[in-house]
Length: 401
Image (cartoon, rainbow, N blue to C red):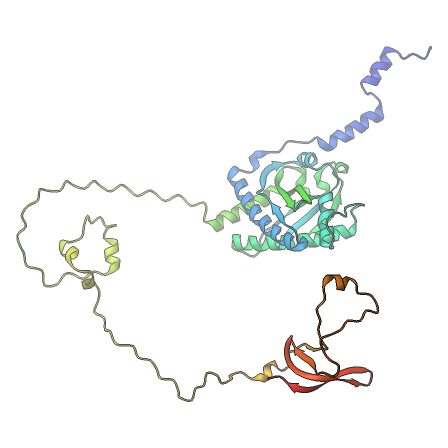
């Protein structure tokens, strides 16, 4: 052999028939290949209902997250779609944080909230008093513990909102957070069993000031989504047949030609009708009221009323509104802050910047002049400084009225 490759060997290299390369290619594609989502498992009406529930739930969670990180939080309207594990891998290729949320009361099921690793680092840094820029290093147990606590408060407020909307008590167990490298899993069943087939994927856009502008996802089992829909529809009064439209009223007959009406004596008493009967008259198909009823003044329809001047009860002569009615013993144990002020002075900013150890500050009090005693900031007495063993004290010399 002259060291040259034959045509068969060249074709073998170009076609990638090497066993190890073939195994690697098969392993990489097996992670991302999978069945397509079955959109028929959930109707459009069911998707809309689930999206409405998720929107209200995430709205409450955003308010809670704002109070945790003290930054403006905005979570947009969700997008509900059917998905498979392959779709999750397409959206989140890097390691991310899976938060498993189980419902213990009101709803039977669980869902998974997915956050990107970088977003979790920013949120946990803000929770620890940082400015959100400390995102170096790997995600550790401290980050997972912090984000679990944040999700516990967020999903707790979400459960409260669901309780109000669905009309029954909703409660969850403490969320479980874990860092997941999606490319290392060949199926979602390693995390949750329902991820092996088609499930509901709800996508939100989350913004935290200028620090986070990302997408988060919630994954629902199909059965759990249907349960939410059934509960939502039952509380909203859905499923009832629409009320039939009322039949059109018959056209009125043409009015006869006007005839001279002979004068007739007024009846002695018109039939009495209460207001409920008068309101029912149009519904009973009566075209118009009796002429006598139209001519009667409005006051004639009201029953006779007995009107008398108002009389006020005389107060007891010994009542004193300024007399204290409470027992002062109830507030005697309330602690108050007592401050002794030696004196005050005013300095400019430049003078304050010149302060150094040894600087003497002259006060507006003269030596030997009584000092001020304040209780909760209010000037109440004057006194003089005394020494009690090794501590300073104050002897009250005058009470300010």
